[in-house]
Image 1 (spheres, rainbow, N blue to C red):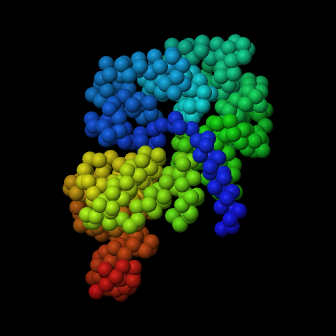
Image 2: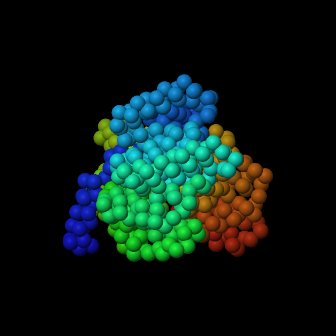
Image 3: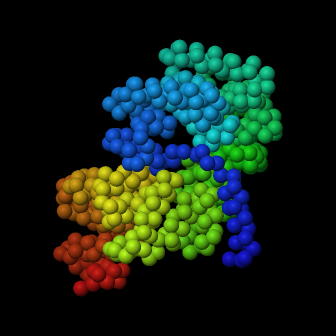
Length: 485
């Protein structure tokens, strides 16, 4: 790698560091932790009121009308506080109130109003939440006559508000015009109502335009056949939206830069740090960074919000990891590593969640806490986290649950999960014995160089296919000398 390339990457990530929003909250992994804490009626050292805070996430419907988890009195007190702070001018609390309204009154357009105001005030995660909000309004059933009437009155008021210069109203009207059951789609409203605000620097208007000219083009043409999408325009609008601080626009820009993985990854980082879940999902899918990258670059990327870079940095700082050492320096380093893993897990890294849960089992055994963090990692599709979760169920003799998560780990290409799945199927611990299915899982793991899978398959086939069993035994030995005769 050339010095100039390193310098460019460092400079670009330093610029991201300076602009990454600080108010993004409740990543996918944090939401799972909140839900787990709520159901278990504990805090996980997370928040004093996990069930109330769950209302602010995309899983708020789980507690909105569940008095066993969240009493009406607690909910009303919580909502009243958000109402007061929003009325006093806090855009963040208006965003939170929008999420709460979405969870408690799905067909009320007020949640779109609140989230749009917050998004336009640069509360990034509110921008992403607007998608769910718009979807709920577009699918109000015809039998909900009062809800549709309320929506019609709210939508009709957007036109006059827009004419007075209210850009948020203009963009809301344009965004919802082609999808609401109470509106009449019109190109001059949908596109015409977005182009001028976008050129004036309205980030959300640019984001919507990038959506409509990009992935949303086909759907828009179904209701507005005269619409002519342009990928060139989609890319330009995404760049403007991202430059003006809309994280969903940064995500769209990343998609347009897939032929330049470095730049695309930077935009996904910016989107994730700003509160766009799809940006975080891209970071989980594949990391641009590698463990051997220079510490300085990893530090810059970590400060910008890339949890993969943070994880590699934490691993480097923790070396050498000595789990059984009583030396003060080793214990202090391990404690710091655990704190880093927990923080990075909450940033959205499923890998860090799994590693933290696994580390807890060695350093501070607490099965409930281990399972909570393993669940958070597994739900965002980290195979190792699913394996740790499965092992926790196994220690409690919850064999069907253990098998389920071992199989999930195998499906997610954590190959040790294939060996464990095969073993439970072979020994009938979790279900009636199924040697053929056990052999299939062993074969998958062995094909991907998991020594235990090869060894177990060898033993399984010893009587029926001795020659193949011998070859598998040799392969297991070659992969791990611990399996040699």
